[in-house]
Every structure is written in C-alpha cells, then in structure tokens.
Image (cartoon, rainbow, N blue to C red; front, side, top):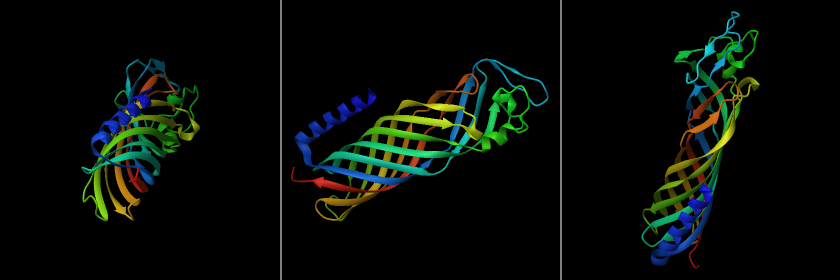
Amino acid sequence: MAYRKVLAIGVAAFALGGTAHADGWYIGGSVGLNNQSESDNSGQTGAFTTGNLGDGSTLDVAAGTPYGWNTEFDNGMAYSLEAGLRYDTGWRSGIEITQSDADVDTHTGVSLGGGSIDGVDAAAVAGSPTPLGVTVADVVADGRGDIKNTAIFVNAYYDFNRGGALEPYLGAGLGYSDVEVTYNPSGIGIINGSESKFAYQAKAGATYEINQSWGVYAEYAYRATEDIELENQLFPGRLEIENTQHIISLGVRYRFDNL
C-alpha cells in the first residue's frame, strides 16, 4: 500500500538522521479549522440520451462531451497527530496522520458541451421522461454532500530561534490521502466514492516553549492532492474534483529529550 511506502521512507529517514544528529523524539497533536477551497469540477461524459428538456424533446449526448460545474464548501474541521525526531542542526522530521472534512455549501454554473444548462429543466440530467418543473440551477444550488480526507505525510521542518521561548518554523510534507466525496444536491446522487491520491503540504507556524518538555504551537498549512477522479452516478462519465485546503490549527507538543 502507498501508506506503507511513505511510512517506510519516514522510518528510514529517522534512522539515518538519528544516527548523526538525534536530539530527542517528540509527539504532538492539533485541532484546526479547514477552509476547503472551491472545486472547478470537470469531466467528459459517456454516450447517453437526456431526459425531457422541458419541451418534450430529448438530446443525444456523444461520448467525450465536456461537462462540469463549480462546488463551494462550508468550513470544516481538521485534526492531526505527529511523531517525530529533532536534530541538533535545527531540523526535525515527523510522520503525521491527518483528517479533515467539509460539507458542500452549493453547486453553481453547470455546463455541458461548453454551454450553460442552468436554465434547462432538471429532468434532462435526472433522466426523467416528464418535466420536473425546476431548473438544473435550482436543483444543484441546494448543495448537500461532503469531502473527507484521511492522509499520512512524511514532513520536514526547520525551527528558527532554536532554544528561544518562541520558535518560528517552516515545513513541508509528502504523502498519500484517501479522499471520500459525496455530491447529492436535492437528494439526487451524483458522486459517491473515494480514491487515494498523492498529497503534499506546506506549513508555517510558531512554537511557544512552556518548559523543557512541553510546547504549544499555532500553524497554517496549505494541503492538496492530485485531482480526484470518480464515476458520475447520474449519467455516464467521469468527473475530476479539485481538492485543496487552507488549515489553521492549534496544537500541543511533548519532547522526550532524555530518551
């Protein structure tokens, strides 16, 4: 599994670094606010025939026709646990497990074949032979659904002002994330699936050292994965979903300096 590969790389890095520069292990955890960025979803359809366009007619859609829409998310929560090793050079490394979630706020700007279908009767995409009396825009504006990330990262940090009461730091990490996405506006199931993707993050924060063992920290993290590719359950086709987050968190860290 990809998670095991990342874990193995992290353990090897700790072993090599620990031999030459070990300065103590640490563990830490944080709780934060997840600002999930909006997703410009895009994909291509398979071949299918629409439902009623509202005037009694239907449309044959060719395979490979582009489609998409924009999804906005509410703010969600983020959590992390990390174990790592400090080095006497100011560097430290860690293996971090993270979770984050965000509910769908709304979907807007539905397009098919390069043109907007917001004003078309929703029966067209729902496959209904009779008009539903509401537009596509009305149906998708209802939102509903969520996006959830469970990831593992191997991180590297550099602590500035090492030994001071306040230690600013920068960090970055590589890993894998299992991403679950549900889009069911107005109770109509469109996307419901998960995919594991390469993930990366960049961090900036500061640690306040309470004493030799305990510290509290505030941190900003930009976190992203490759686009999530899932099957559309409403009509044939795949959809690519963007997945980026801005996370602000507060945490606590404990150092095992005597180990």
